[in-house]
Image (cartoon, rainbow, N blue to C red; front, side, top):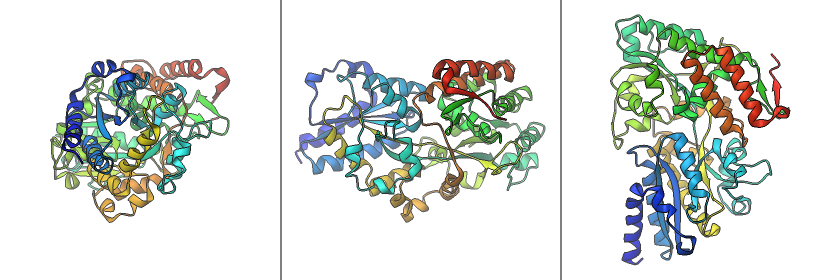
Length: 456
């Protein structure tokens, strides 16, 4: 491979990290290099895990195809801003990437907006398609039956708790709450003890984006036992008037009323997750956190704030249902994958690079560095994957009973309405009133013909 091609790959990978969207917007489709593949992805602050995954694959790909180059387009943004900026890039052939990293919850909305193209014909020749879990395949399949992405990661959620904080409060090291009330009781015990730790944190409010909806609200809602959730798949209608919805908001209100959580200002800080991972948890200033399977990536040797002691200090407990009924526990699963926008320069070439990004070896290494759960059977059978983290087996087992968000184009707007309802309760609105406003908003979003009242 010529030296200038190698240099170009390194240059674009390094320079793109600081390349603003306005610079990309100045590009012209006439000036786009047909031998250049651009890939857009979310970068969390100073994290480089995705960048390293893509760069390694890009170097191998360019060695195999000397005429082709890869340009990384990391979008450094909060969750909601990432989706907006990614869609801005895809909205014009002048600025569109050739590959985009898509959250499964936003994918069908982007399909409906005309940003993504079907890749069903390309998937037919993809050797690892049968290795992907069926639920993950369904998440990237549109209502038209076409496939719009290749799933890569999934995740589950649980209760992380700090054993030292629990010991200080006289709580057991093998804690497993059997109901919401037992979670609140543990939080009250921490509050009333000599510990200076904040008892409990659940992501909530509009600045937290989908984190608030999925690992905050829906971890509560899907455990209410009213059999409704957000959407009735059989009736193909969104659920309104759910008591479980009100109860979930009431749990959130209790956290604030009883001073069991961080301040309102901290909850509304879009960067609060970084504070939690780099200081509050490692320093023993937080007792209980409802969060996902991936967060230990923040404490690896290569992370900005390594915390090698975390396996000994943090405990894990299943999130219980509201009263311990039903399945007894609840978790939500999601995931990310790669898609091809309509503005791609050459879809076949883009898919060739996609296949390099999702080879077995590449994904094993990515899962280990990113601390995520794989959707692929071939990756899950690799001994390196099975042993990369003390928590990987626990979180992988949770997938068996996981709930999934409604994979519908209107879900992102419904999710925003959930975040608004949470924030309303956090700032003083009664749960019943916030739930009624949510019902009205969802009716406006999907139309009165696509909603129904809860059956219990």
